[in-house]
Amino acid sequence: MNSSIEPPTSLLSVPTGALRIPELPPASPNADDEAVVFSLVIPTYNEAANIHKIVSVLSTLLDESMAGNYELIVVDDNSPDGTWNIAQSLVSEYPQLRVMRRQQERGLSSAVIRGWQASTGSVLGVIDADLQHPPHVLEQLLQAIEQGADLAVASRHVDGGGVSSWSFIRRFLSRGAQILGLLILPGVLGRVSDPMSGYFLVRRNCIVGQTLNPVGYKILLEVIGRGKVGKIAEVGYVFCERKQGESKVTWKQYVDYIHHLIRLRLSTGPLGRFSQRVGFPIGRFLRFGLVGLSGVFVDMAVLYLLSDPTTLALPLTRSKIIAGEVAIFNNFLWNDIWTFADVSSHQQQWRQRLKRFLKFNIICLAGLVLNVLVLNLVFNFIIPNRYVANLIAIAIATVWNFWVNLKLSWRVTQVK
Ligand code: GDD
Ligand code: MN
Image (tube, rainbow, N blue to C red):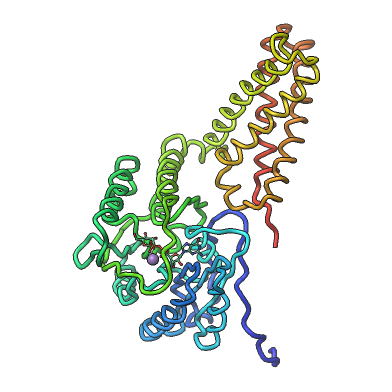
């Protein structure tokens, strides 16, 4: 049809919005033999020294077993060392390679999910770029899936597995983290011997349509916790030493990990399931309510400091306006880092924060107007008790504040 030569291959565009894997479009009947069956994501950050090697080894390996039926998707977070650029230059040599360069979001787990979202395979996988995950293990992982597993995990803790030369401290921390996880989330961590593994394959249909919400590094927890994963297979592997580049692990990963465990615990427990069934984010609403409560104390404290005769004794109205605004600021901060952390962590630029704050401010002011209106309405026409009327007014304004902020302030707003 089109006789012009294909333009030079371009970067994959970055999916936006929720971290949800879309269903595959129904296969056209005659495109059968072209269907990509396996999509392997390679997340990278400053892997310039490794990227060529890993792409070449994986391509050789997969060309042998499934030529043309796989894709390698490098997802790079705009590495300063230009990994994405090097990767893109390899595409002509490795036609199964696709490259995504992310500039708005960062982080290992979301990189993997963005890659899967852009993929076309019915089996999805992830492997590190730094050659610490031995590529030949892929064959066994693929075999396990072929034999019916929903999830095939490369594990350091089954036969044939291990760590090459970790210090005692690192082994201790790794095991400690696993035990902590078992205590908090036995239903997830108890299902695999190496829940920290970042090397695994999963059937797409196990996680299709689920909104994944990871923090930090441990995406496998998310897949087991929120996916519909039946049979799990494990294949031993030895976690090799890094030869090139540096690990990105810092103490922050430990904090993120604990945060992730708690979040999964809450959202996949009974409350989480109920909230999904009724389609209302109950956990989020409770957090929002708690933050609102903290705002009441802030408001009171500032009002006292400014207007009390024993302190600054400023005029009441002026004091109240300042107190109210300080409370709004307080609430915004907590909501941004806690209630809506999953959304704001993807939009960390100052400009984006400021925008959220302004929206939050306007919506809360509108909420105050609504509060006064409802109070008057209820008091004058329905329940002639000012405190009961006020409670009703506060409840309605809180739901308004929550719902409108959910839809407008902390919505994922990046547009390409
Ligand atoms: N896109 C992107 N964004 N990639 C990242 C980021 C990021 O913010 N951070 C790290 N990566 C990439 C690295 O370039 C590498 O390919 C891979 O993710 C793993 O990062 P490392 O920094 O090498 O992690 P590690 O070697 O300490 O940990 C690995 O082994 C663990 C086993 O305990 C990871 O694979 C973990 O997922 C795994 O659990
Ligand atoms: Mn590594």
